[in-house]
Image 1 (cartoon, rainbow, N blue to C red):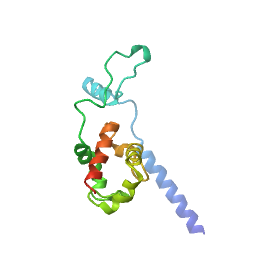
Image 2 (tube, rainbow, N blue to C red; image 1 turned 180 degrees about the vertical axis):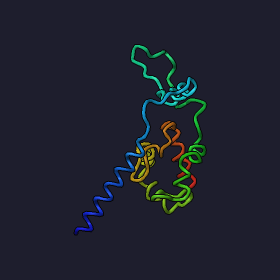
Image 3 (cartoon, one colour; image 1 turned 180 degrees about the horizontal axis):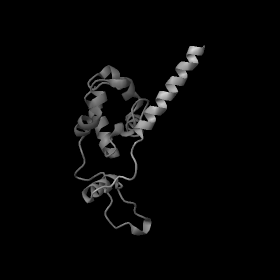
Image 4 (tube, rainbow, N blue to C red; image 1 turned 135 degrees about the vertical axis):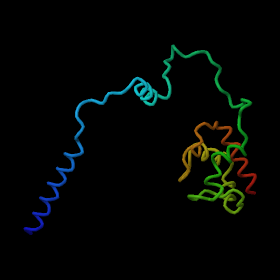
Length: 147
């Protein structure tokens, strides 16, 4: 018991000495103009907030936009990671036996699952820049390729 107390006391003492040695910096750190500018750019917010009265009259993005990605593109960009290998319970692309029960529930259920997430699948399959129509096209692509 006496040795245990001595060991604990020695450990505490060595810890205090180590912490004291690590806190040897005194004073402020001075940055050069370039360093200050680089730090400000790194710490700047990623976007800006617009209040209702400040919103410009830019046209709203629509799902019929010509830059819309195909189901194949969305699948290869975002879905293939899990559905290509069947990871975390995801139905594997091209495996009809894994898709039949899901298809039987209806396409609307599959669309909602893809957009909102389902069990281990996060919302939108983490394709946050995908529109709902692009996600539906990806679901259609996976279903068509798995029948």
